[in-house]
Image 1 (tube, rainbow, N blue to C red):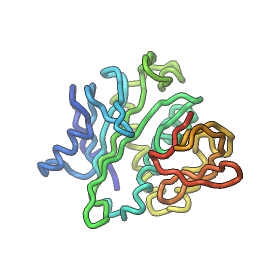
Image 2 (cartoon, one colour; image 1 turned 60 degrees about the horizontal axis):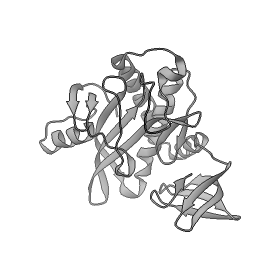
Image 3 (cartoon, one colour; image 1 turned 30 degrees about the horizontal axis):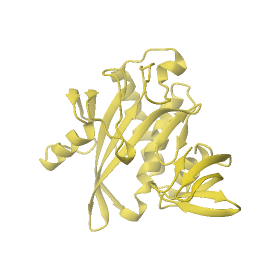
Image 4 (cartoon, one colour; image 1 turned 90 degrees about the horizontal axis):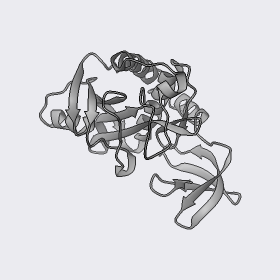
Length: 241
């Protein structure tokens, strides 16, 4: 499932995911198309949060995947693959990263990238997907949250266009490597999981507690060991403290 044969460059857009969805609704987008924006004025993140990015400094893109044909019950496969694509991409710049469940990418405890996947579903099957990605490349000042970037880690400026084509190479390589190798995918995703097997603080509906991440279910639920019992948490049921 190759991507990148077509790249659409935008100067200014509300969000690349919204733009991609509009093209899809109008029947004007082909599989593998990548939408790259210089600036998003309403970038979307996980849990309806906003992704804030300085214009022209970062990789803010959406990738359209057609004919995904994946059962809804296995939709977390997409999250795992895209997370590993970003890990692979950063390795190419000699940056070691971790996946903060479910799909944020962290370097040395600071966020460098986030993912928002929006699926188009028919009869419990994912027919197509819009993969939204924001990755900090050249930005070095972040006002509202603890974050980092490729430039902060390497000290080097990167051309966004060149960076995009390295991303496309990582995407095609990792997708083909893992999409039909679910056991290997699960193993690699867990290998790169942030705070795995380390006691840390979390918050659920009963309050703050100390626990240890022990695994991730195929459904995407996070397994945390709490008071010698393993508890499953969905994506809106647990917070990292």
